[in-house]
Length: 254
Image (cartoon, rainbow, N blue to C red; front, side, top):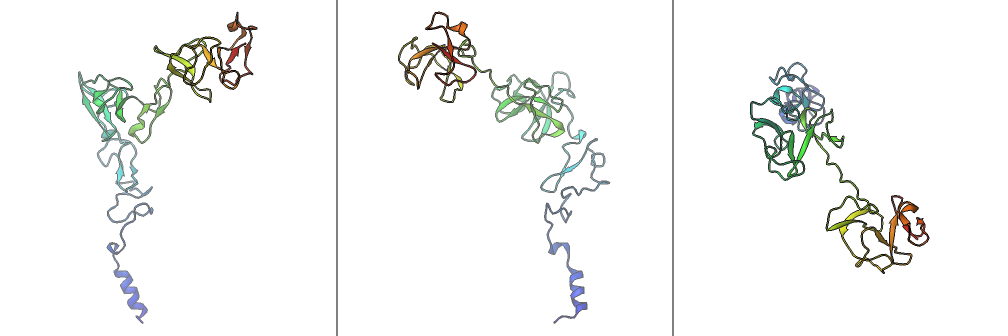
């Protein structure tokens, strides 16, 4: 059995090389620039690192994250400032860098290979051009998705297409018309069919625009309505909302 003094000496000789740093344990070990919230406040600042102003954070791999330092980005892709005449500021999400380029011509929702293919103030995200924004918004949909992009930059979520109206027949373009598209009552644009008022119908031969097949009632084409005034000259002239279950306040003329 080793004497206590010898054990103490052996323990003192253990080096950090014998115990590799474990990223995420909250202890800045050998080879780690930081670990969690453990960042050197004197050394690891944007100013000391020559990255302008801002706040340094720690990546999950224990390397310094200087993305919030203003000096890392020479131009602003949201405001489109910081580039010379005839050039525009583009942010590349894949490389998390900005560059000044000539203006692209792909608009919102159009395909792109990189951000400079898009119009200014847009970024290429998932092969589609998306309008850029920041925490101040400036999106048509008022939904700026910032994700993990630096400087509070983000992209505008696409504005959902307006729901079509099966009574007024708006929201769809020929050769499509607005129909109740499934058993859940959801509306959608489907190819125009020709079933007239009172014709038998099924899922393969459905009704003309403005009509609905009353499945579970008589399987005939009925005129859609929301108000009695839309049923003038049809049956009793009433908009019945109980014989079939429809969403959005819809009924059928009876």
